[in-house]
Amino acid sequence: MAAQILDGKVLSAQIRDKVAERVCALKEQGVNPGLAVILVGNDPASEIYVRNKEKGCAETGILSRTIRMDAETSQEDLEAEIGKLNADPAIHGILVQLPLPAHLDEQAALAKILPEKDVDGFHLVNAGHLMTGTEGVVACTPKGALYMIRSTGTELSGKEAVVIGRSNIVGKPMAMLLLQQNCTVTVCHSRTRNLAEHTRRADILVAAVGKPGFVTADMVKPGAIVIDVGINRVDGKVCGDVDFESVKEKAGWITPVPGGVGKMTIAMLLSNTAEAAERTLSRE
Image 1 (tube, helix red, strand yellow):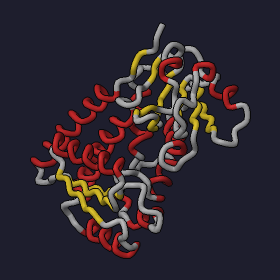
Image 2: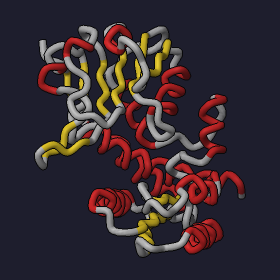
Image 3: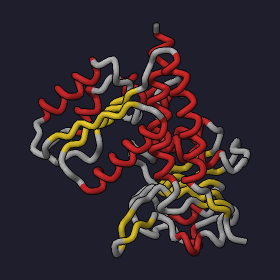
Image 4: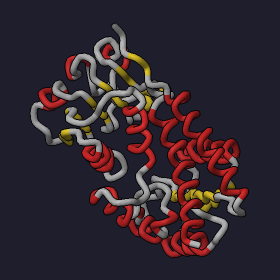
């Protein structure tokens, strides 16, 4: 039997509807949630992503502000812009669109964002909260992936989970979130030996390696939940890290690309922005 499709369009709509309700409640209390995105240069993929964020803000009632900076922008000017947004009470969430041009220091720029306005969840303070299981902002993509996993209704406690990829943006935070669900987690990467031996044990398999069709059916446990975080372009078409056509015949649940985790990433960004605005009320 073919796997059930975890439809990112349907699941992200659930999140957006809840965000819209939260935004209405905030506005009734005099707070209009605001999200600012800094875009340096004109990377085509980044342009598309920023437009999708602007659309998501419009649909949920969040104030959207996009700051466009030249590709030759200096580190000093970038950090100065972040400083202005930190001081702006109308902005509750700040996002620096990655990747930045090669001459800019991404980590230094992200570190300048106030942790409470870091709606991407990349600041070291928020990464530390996730590591220690304390309250903080959770990175959007793994947060969205976990929502998809939980939507299956599967009892996660005690399950074997394998994450392929160890990036700070997806792999590591995904592993932490699964640990918090009491899964037994294995993180695999480019140096992992006998990778398929690990993946075939996985009740939950998350692929985040950036290699098209990397995960094949022979690497998947029958009935597994397969989450494909990859976004790759092959011959002009978008595809994931999972060989969808073969794996869907073996998995229990699977996310498509496009139309899967990517939709959830933006939905969780909107949710994190609403949450940041809500925290300003609790501090008053």
